[in-house]
Length: 266
Image (cartoon, rainbow, N blue to C red; front, side, top):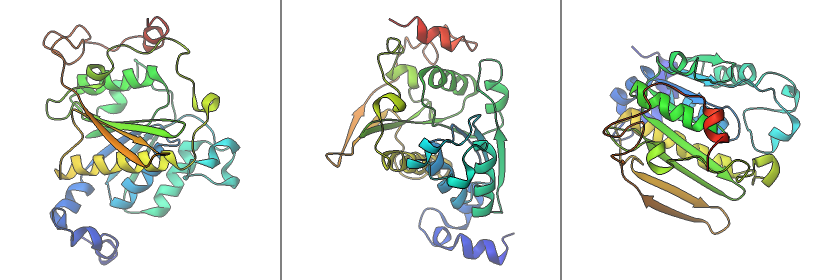
């Protein structure tokens, strides 16, 4: 049953063709994990919470830093120095008290990834490093979970949906990590402050489409956004039969040392 407050809150969804009351109920019954509550995770979490996803988890162990506030819209000046997970939980609960927020203030590792991801229906990879991206991908494949992926660099971003209904995974698109130190971090290269909002919102869009069974999901497609040229471009890719994780004869059947994997990439 819906309360009057909930009916008012979700009214624009309930009247929307393709969502309706049944779709809103599906969102309430869903559980989504967001890995990283930074530039990408902040807008994604805000929109998923506002949409009424019933159980939202977030993996984040950092504290709010002044340099975050240029783009990480979950946080404000008084929250500097506080754990991001706690600040995010409070802000999201204020936004929508009808949902459950679970925090995992830990570093995701090969030892804890499977237990943490196991109880969620869908995962969003909003991380900013390659070891975590490969770890989250492999864990999702092993657990049979779809994965919404996003990444940003300076004025450009990209996103896709991996391992969705038999579709390709992250390793099908990026079989090997880039050479160590070949891709600068946001701290080194900079990032246009509004860019994570664009990509993070698109990630939330794909997540809601997956949960609701709406539209054409970005499975087997990488969407690239160029902020300076105001241009979107889509590249298609396919599941690789020789993929070590989701291929016909997978060699990766347990989680690995992903720091070592990325350090030894050539």
